[in-house]
Image (cartoon, rainbow, N blue to C red; front, top):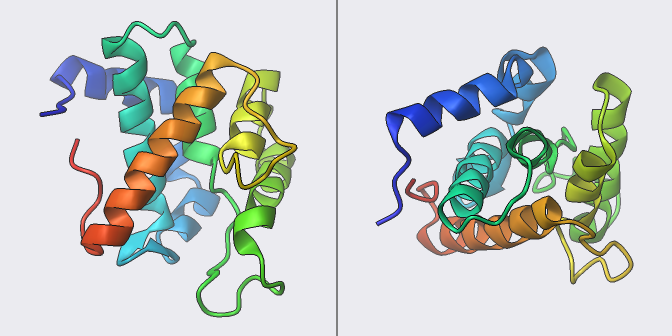
Length: 158
């Protein structure tokens, strides 16, 4: 069973700083990501799983960039289920929208930018994860998304 220690949970909270309490992050609570899971709950699951994988498998990504990039990876701020995205290919385009939104509000490192823009790889063929942190978030996002889609009313258990 995957479980974060109390210290690891505190570490994640410290690394995220004020990101989860911003007005924009609060908007993510209103949008459904998969099943009945909000975008906000989804990104927190991806944060926790990414952090866990990095720490417990000694993958060597920098925790601060990993956690921030994971939190902002779906920062697109609309409901794609109810016509919030004007196009038909939300899965292909939302990483660029999330990156644009995040860059407008926060200073981002190159690693954080790569995490956000490449998390949908291989669907987004040309946006390849170029660093450990981006690969970790890409994998964690697939795991959490699959779980949320199949179970439909529960976040990934961590």
